[in-house]
Image (cartoon, helix red, strand yellow):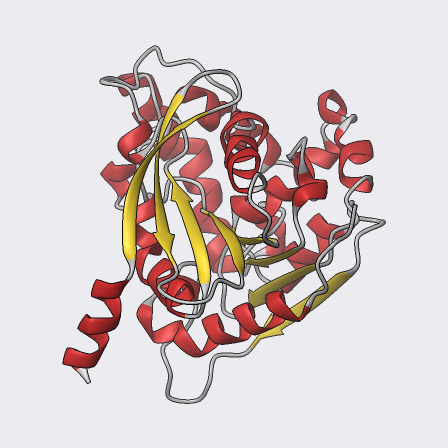
Length: 297
């Protein structure tokens, strides 16, 4: 079995892509090409502070199922970060407006259905994309509103402690969100920290921020079929957090799924959706995506 899996992996061509964001920022991306007949292109839109290498196994699996997959490191993380994050200026939403929008620009040039798989922030980004009509279908995992009030009491206490006491000290010393010191993800630019901290104070995330009122109209424009799935054991994005976020997507055909980890299997949590043990879930995601008719222009 291991030999067979290795042979399949070797047949997948992985190519490093120098992706240029819409505002000219250079990004690191990788393309996993399907070895046989191609069913469509797929963008893997990752979570906050999670490098693209975390999604490699999912990308390889999807490629074996006939999808060309593009992964990328957003500006400021992974292989797309500058020499120093101190003094690096950006907005959290640049990841959608500039970086992921460029990925859609690139893959939509090909005459293939364009699919989207989002993890956490990657689900948020759908409504922020200036070119979301190019997407055929979207499937997101673990996307929620970020407010601690939607979480369990224990998790809410931890999150409030982190935002109120721990992270402000780290940021004051480093000049950026040195999240790696807590073992929770890649370090993040100051702009991401400031935006994220502000929006997590609101039950409906940035939709409750009067400075971001224009986002209601942007999300109302989305008409792409979307699945928003989250596990009942996801500590950061439980189902009610997901439900609070998707209220803004008033015109998109939405399917909301509450995932139940199988008895004896590993819990999903917030990161387990893309661990190797979740392969049965990956097959469900890919099957649903290709069941959606391609959009006609």
